[in-house]
Image 1 (cartoon, one colour):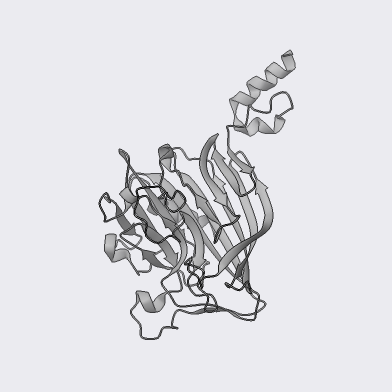
Image 2: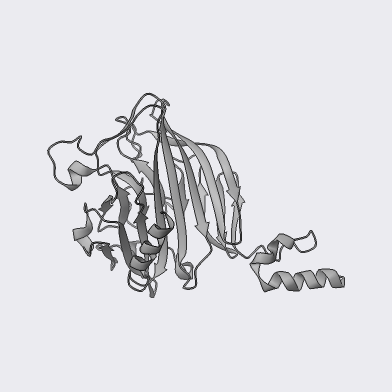
Length: 328
């Protein structure tokens, strides 16, 4: 190696911010810094500082999803089933695939479940797959269809992955814009939705190994958080010998902010702005319908923070305030 390349190698080792100097002679030096996205035939692998964080599955699936979801210390925060069929975890709710966005009534079609009458979300293509020293981005276009294949709406989603913070916290930003395809689009009033993750069994409130807890921005805890409106919600519990948690932030620009939370003691954790009659025990089963007129669109934005400890250790309230200020 000549002196110039040796100097470049030394410079590159001093900081990921110098990775733009990369040459053919030193391509691997920066491969382990920042957020790296590696596109494969059926998924996109997401690495944080050279280690697997998650993978975005988009081919031959009922809907795109992220799996696994590795939190601080690379601890698994979502359950393995049904992605791994031989796991000893409880085999309930096969449509709870780690990290996903879907809804149970879209012009009357169920896109939340995976039954014989359920619709699907079809991946149409990537608009962007980009790595970076601070963030990486997956942007896709998808079509929501009935079981017969009739298009209900399209979505454009952007998932932004951030490098780990000083306490190894991991941040994911999820944005999705829905556009009707057959006249008006009605997102029906049902608790079955919408922006969701399914947590590891030890993090859940109840069950053979569940030792977790839930708290929201209003101070409500555990079972009392179900069906309540809140700006953020946090679900935490043990994985191995560590306590870790995940917070989901609703965004003030979202329709019906602050959202209702479909958060269950068995590990389902979902923000759902459409299930009003379920959450508030209303007789009108259409009270929570949201209609997106033909030619219009609706955009939803959420932030996920995977953190150490409970919501206090993760400084979730302070992080939410900072997040909201950045959205003004």
